Amino acid sequence: MAKLRKTSLQLPPTLLHEMSRCPGLNRSEALRLWIERGQYLAGINSANVAHIAEEYAPILRAALEDLDYDDYRVVVRSLPQMVAGFFGEVLSERSDGRSWRSEVHDHELDPNELVKKLEN
Image (tube, rainbow, N blue to C red; front, side, top):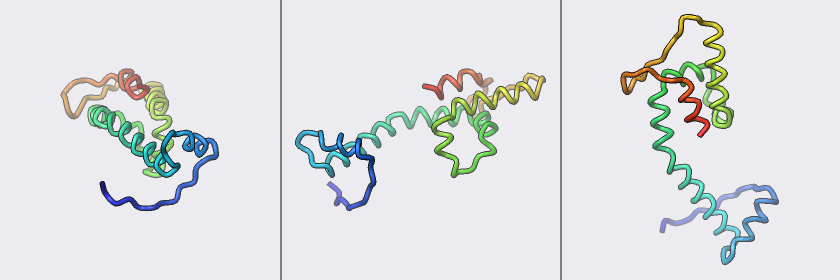
C-alpha cells in the first residue's frame, strides 16, 4: 500500500456524525473509505460519460460554448436542463430544421436522446 499523506478537510457536523457510525473504523479510516468508494463509483461510469461526450460533441460544443472552465460545477448539476434549453433557443431562432451529425459515427444525432442520456 502506498504511503498515506495527511490532509485537512472541513466537513459538516452531520457527515462527521455519520463517519463515527462506521463500526470498527476510526474517523480517518472511514473518511478514506468513503472517498475511495466515491472515486471508484465515479470511475465506473466514466467510460459511458466519455462515449456520450464524444458522440454528441457537436451538440455539446454548441450548447456550452458560452461557458468557461470555472463554470463546471454549474454544468455538472444542470447539464440536461442546459442542453434542453439550448435546443429550445435554437429551435425558436431557426426554422431551417438544423440537425447535428456525429463526428465519430456518421449518423444524425437525436437531441432528445442526448437529454435522456444526460438525465440518466
